[in-house]
Image (cartoon, rainbow, N blue to C red; front, side, top):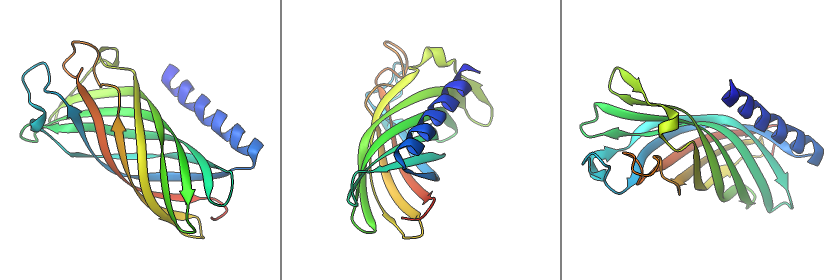
Length: 197
């Protein structure tokens, strides 16, 4: 319940700030290719045994324009990360609520965006067809990372983009199985900004 209230509080804060500044709202969703990067884990699984697995993301965005060229774009996203392990039968699912704060450079259609991201782990599971829940207290609750991407926005408000989402902090705590692994994702996103470009 605490996690849901935190998410709703962040969303309400973004909404209030956006209305006060006359910013534009939008929605964003897409698919992601996720894996872990870093050193081998504590159980002898080499990082080369991790491969990309599919995930998804979706949420809301606000845009504060400083000029026609530059804007600040905070987002609140649900993001399924993780990795395929070994022969592809096992998978680590990591469910986050992410808050990227992006500086966006608009070039009359094409755009570039980059900035820091804070994530909050809400659920974790490991396994094949039957997944076992991992206690979130056994992993890092907060995740620090960064986002960089390019895309194209139409005058209708529709946008298409590609992002790289990298982790700075590890997935696990010290001396945990995943204490040297970090999230790594390629995101393919579709967005819509209400009121057009």
